[in-house]
Image 1 (tube, rainbow, N blue to C red):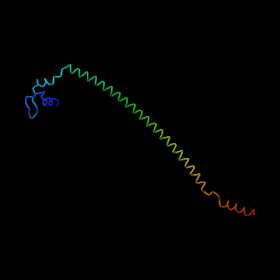
Image 2 (image 1 turned 90 degrees about the horizontal axis):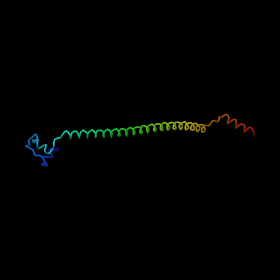
Image 3 (image 1 turned 30 degrees about the vertical axis):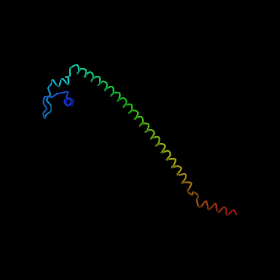
Image 4 (image 1 turned 90 degrees about the vertical axis):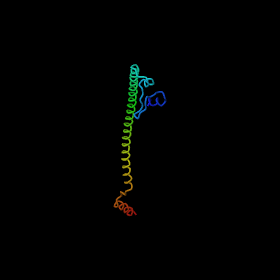
Length: 129
């Protein structure tokens, strides 16, 4: 794209335009785009090494951050599981208490007096008059 842009801008001349593309004289090409020398490559390699080191540092730092987040989330899950277990225990205790009071209420509503006892009580009152 850089070469095509240079041709369209007029910075780079070409010998011939064909269906396959442009024919460019190498001297003209190197005039606009100087060849890469060993020193440039060495600088790029050292820059790439420094960049790679920086990327490794950022990556390891990011990994540490994500590990800490993971630990925090795991701790939060454990706390929620403990809380859920406590709620279940409370629920079971309240259910037992409700069952107990339900039985007590049902017992109060039942007539536990025997008919014979009531009659004997009634007959005694009559006999005392």
